[in-house]
Amino acid sequence: MRAIIGCVAAVGVLFAIDALVFRTNLYPSVIEPGSSAGVYELTLRKEKQRQAGPGELIVTLGDSRFAYLPRLANELTATSGYTFTSAGVAGTNPRMWYYMLRDLDPTARRYQAVVLGVDDYDDEDTFADYEDYLVDLHYIIKRLRLTDVWDFAASYRTMPHQWEAFRGSLFKGLTYQRDFQAFLLNPSKRIKDVRFIHGGWAEWTYNFVEEDRSLRGLTVDWKNMKASYPDTFDPIQRQTVQNVTLRAVTPQTGYLARYRRKWLGRILDRYKGSPTRIVFARLARGPVPRPDYLVQKRSSSIRELAARPNVLLCDEHAFESLEHPELFKDALHLNREGSTRFSALLVEEVRRVLGPPRSFK
Image 1 (tube, helix red, strand yellow):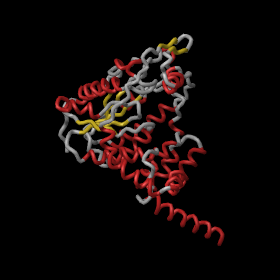
Image 2: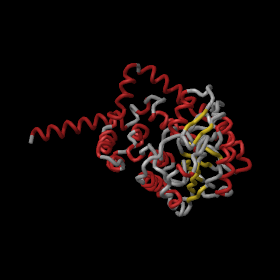
Image 3: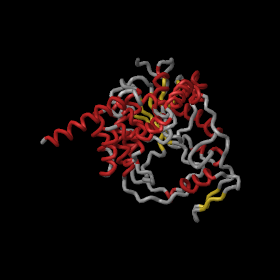
Image 4: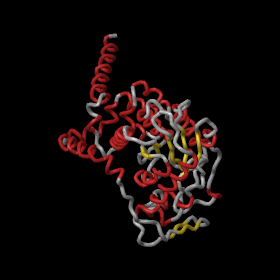
């Protein structure tokens, strides 16, 4: 009995220390700005500041493929009536968008609309198993409350990942471990870097100018699943074409539909009864879209979700004019010209779907 009491007491002390350092703002305020959690927190912080500004705000969420530029979109505010702002973070997915929106818009009333950028309205499983993505924990670790621990861990599909998510969200120091060790090597430099990046992040991201390199010259022989491209293509361009454009057909298990219904459904549930509308936008598929016979679509969870009140779909063909090699810098991402065109098209399509701004504040 004494041994049991001793173990319980030791765990309690460990949790208290962990909570003091990592559940308060004591350590999270100096996490590495370039880390997954650092960029996620910088984005949320930037958007919190942006909320205080004027305008009928539309916030967009997505990964790096949602490559429009709010700066260019807002050059059209006089005609659209809306101001665009981006809470998107590279490498994120709907589970991470949910926690972003929960803390960014706790009243679910700050935005005229939330626009979510998705690869397709139809469900096709790929190599990315979002249900078991442990990287999510490292992005959203600061956002996870004690009351989230069990639910967050249970959202993973396999037992090993459930355990990692459980212990990493309960004892946050385990998740911050590598970052904390790097901090201890040179804390003064980390603090200096954090202050510098926090001071300029909002301006740097808003005034960002995309690269102008392109995939011009790319052709694909779909019959033999081979790509031809100029010798000038760099390794990233070649690798993304091989891994993304020419990816193998994946066995369909229905995981993506389950995942979307769960996490996109949770976002919609947060805005149920809110005047804020949810808009889905299907992004440009790529520089050379796959032919229909290589696409396996078993369901359309997003169209199902669009049957709910205040949920809208952009025209799924609205951005197909961007699907050309000269408008992509690699097989995933638009280049400067592509992003410029996308920004204007996005404003036009969202304005068409929403109509003029509503007054509800």
